[in-house]
Amino acid sequence: MRVMAAAVTAAALAAAAMPVATAARADDAEVERLVRQHVQPMLIAAGGMAVAVHIDGRTLFFNYGLADVARKEPITSDSLFNLASIGKVFLATLLAQAVERGEVALDDPVAKYVTELQQGGDIRNVTLGELATHTSGLHRTPQQYEPAHRGAYKLPDFIRYLNSWKADDAHMPGKQDIYSNTGFVLLSLTLQRRFNTPIANLMEARLTAPLGMSSTVMPVPTANARGQLAGAFRRRAVQGYNFDAQPVGEPGNQQGVFNWPGTGQMYSSSATWRPSSPPISARCRTSARCRRRWRWRSRACSRSTSVSPRRSPGRWCATATSPSSTRTAG
Image (cartoon, rainbow, N blue to C red; front, side, top):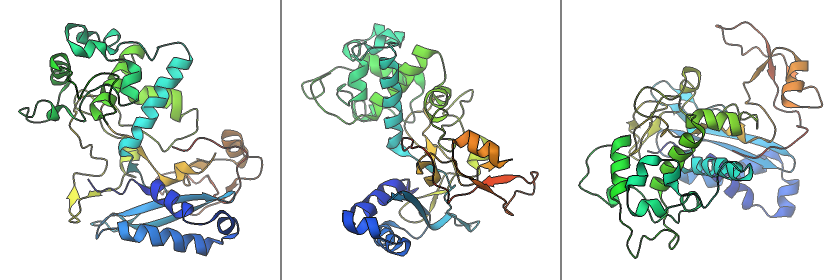
């Protein structure tokens, strides 16, 4: 699904294209020219891209195309994109944090927490560390191992597949580097079981909320299937398009092989990638509250006329004030 979620990658490429000396003195127009030069070949007839470039102590935002062609909604720095496999970085970070706290160990077998796998065979030898480093031996997707399976994998299908999985010389735990979506879905399930908490809640409580990443979210778990983005986030999600510029699903639609609560992908906006800042449209009722919440040392809020008619007027965080601290991108 072509949703142009690689905005940060494009920005990094554009910044990397400038020599250090040039980058240090480049004005905004020059940065925009270089970003456009790298972004333009990746754009298709539909959709678009949001780019954030942090350079020389400032963050610049560039937006291209439409979030929804039918409704003629432009891409903005608050538009939410499916992060695709960047979500794996967050899952691995959750695991690293749990290891640091002594809550799990990298050498723990996955069957210790997903207890249904204690009835399996070779899967009992797979460890948490191997899942996180793509060395579990598991295939990229289950269908590569059992091509006769049709349709999405529900949790019982997934457990059945894992218990029946047999390692061979090319798929041996701890022996080969094999990029595996299967392994990270299993890691997500393992973390949910270990902490008895839906992965979306765990991600928010342990990573995104402490880092102030209020526009990086996972779908809210539902009674069945993957879950959905909460309404406010779903309205900000871009429409996905394929290479023929045809829409794929609905905004916030979850694509993929795995289909049970907790298997949804992460979404984020380019504004999230600005060091120590709130989303551009994050509201602060008073400048004092804004400074307190985001730890800005200088005045960081200004009046805005772009207030939703459904909400009472308030104050909005400005975008030009330099932050006082730096947070991890994501």
